[in-house]
Amino acid sequence: MAVSTVYTVQSLNSTCSISTPTKSHLGIQKQQVLFYTKKTNRGRVRGGEIRCAGDTIVIGLAADSGCGKSTFMRRLTSVFGGAAEPPKGGNPDSNTLISDTTTVICLDDYHSLDRTGRKVEGVTALDPRANNFDLMYEQVKALKDGIAVDKPIYNHVSGLLDPPELIKPPKILVIEGLHPMYDERVRDLLDFSIYLDISNDVKFAWKIQRDMAERGHSLESIKASIEARKPDFDAYIDPQKQYADAVIEVLPTQLIPDDNEGKVLRVKLIMKEGVKYFSPVYLFDEGSTISWIPCGRKLTCSYPGIKFAYGPDTYYGQEVSVLEMDGQFDKLDELIYVESHLSNISTKFYGEITQQMLKHADFPGSNNGTGLFQTIVGLKIRDLFEQITASKASATLEATKA
Ligand SMILES: Nc1ncnc2c1ncn2[C@@H]1O[C@H](COP(=O)(O)OP(=O)(O)OP(=O)(O)O)[C@@H](O)[C@H]1O
Ligand SMILES: O=C(CO)[C@H](O)[C@H](O)COP(=O)(O)O
Image (cartoon, rainbow, N blue to C red):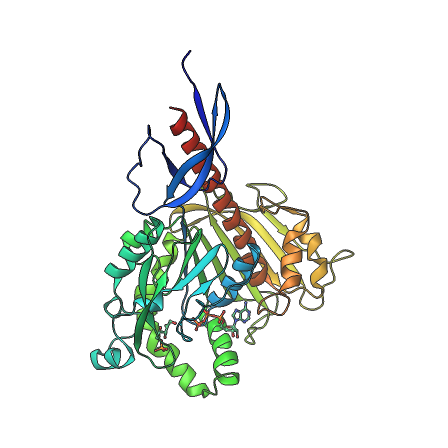
């Protein structure tokens, strides 16, 4: 009687090939070894090796400096559990953050010109000529293919390029910085992309808050720095938002006429339709146009109140769904009321968004749409990761059956 064989992979999170006397590796360059259970019509045998590569999914996060990338990264890492830390025993000025699931690399590390070099050449760090996109592409591709790389480090303290650090392929690689979607080759490696679009007024208010209070800069120098960067920001950074799968746009409130304090914010979550493994969040009824003031018995709102909006729209000629929140929460635990009216949020249990927001109540933006939408995008990324993983697992199983 012929022996029929079914391979059940136990810890499958990638496209894997089976290494047995009868099956050879399928073009795998660097492998991770797992085990499989071999089920034959003579019983179940554990053994052999499953070799995996290309496990890493790559997320791009683009924004100008001081626009909340680090805060977003902390929220994202927290969704996966565990804390993110710089590589152990490495350069204390490393820009990398590693947790169990995620590795966040900062694209400033691909500056090809150091601070002096940029001054001599008369270019800003936003200018593509100050960045090495060939190396960025090669290294992100290698990590995606399961290969460790020696990544350079741009030292923000000294303004110099330091010796490289070893980066191993993680489950989720986040590339954050000024240009994750600028180079087409790098863009094509992204499984999901996000752009933090902070309007000039709000950016200015945040910069003043941080650079004056925490870094002792003068108001004039902050203004001058924003102005000096603006032409390159408009030319090279801002256009990337057309490629993003999700954009978090932060604007001044419309609830206070002529507000110029920048404390109350109107935040939009713009979600592209038709992105594989990503279904946009909706309020009440998918595809409808909704305006909702949730203030009342279940949600405490002081002046100027809270207003939500949801509906379909177009963004750079593409179909999107937009969820908007203007105003801020008084009592964060009451966010559960809003959460219960949102759908497609990819939570694992009732109230997970509210729990995440309460956990990080001290992060900037926790009382408004910036924190809420960053948390939602974090949950959507977890969902995307789990879907890609599951789809690779079933593809592998099919391949091994064939
Ligand atoms: N959602 C928010 N609401 C209010 N202020 C915020 C928010 N996000 C960020 N900020 C302000 O902007 C500052 C910079 O935030 P963060 O460090 O997250 O940005 P970044 O993009 O990582 O900055 P950089 O690239 O310069 O390191 C914070 O210190 C805070 O003052
Ligand atoms: O736009 C930036 C991204 O963080 C920085 O200004 C750029 O990386 C240069 O850094 P530094 O000002 O420390 O020389």
